[in-house]
Image (cartoon, rainbow, N blue to C red; front, top):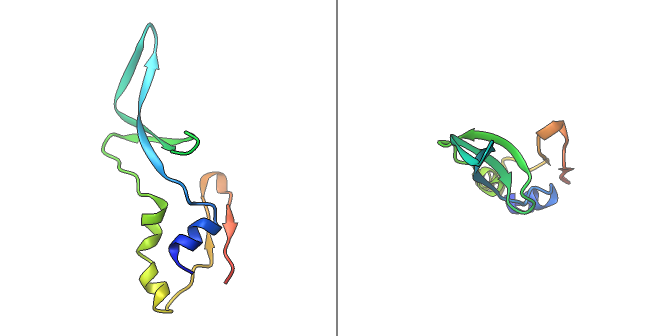
Amino acid sequence: MTSKEAIEKAGLDWLVETVPIYTREQKFEQVENWQAIRRVKDKKVYGVATSKYEPIQNKDAFQFFDKVVGDGQAVYETAGHSRKAREFGSLPT
């Protein structure tokens, strides 16, 4: 199984983006040096980080391992999301 297949089976085939954070008192004011991290497809915010943070997409995080799996040295067994300790899916071996 490739990383693309593992990501799809585990329900991790989505992208994240960073967006500015604003406060509102009398008017909207951007919070400097901080950004929200959210899923692109539903705009769900997963956290905040400094403006220096650059997210790694799931596809990129998994892809480095394809050579090891392709060489038969390992297999994708489980993939999931650690938010609230809930696993999105187990992969067939």
